[in-house]
Length: 80
Image (cartoon, rainbow, N blue to C red; front, side):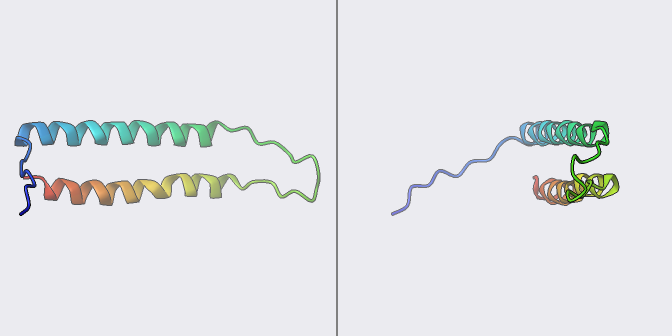
């Protein structure tokens, strides 16, 4: 005998929570991009240490945006 409670949030509440989480992720991603873009180019102390490539850092900071878009798109479609 299973006594799992089945309940759902009202559509207005679930939509509000959805947009709250979207806003939180957008703000967090903007801070990540800001941190990547604001880093100063420093030359390594030793020539054996490779210098970071700015374009690669920006690329790897932008990649999660596409994952977030896909996740939020799927979540939005699943909302009642």
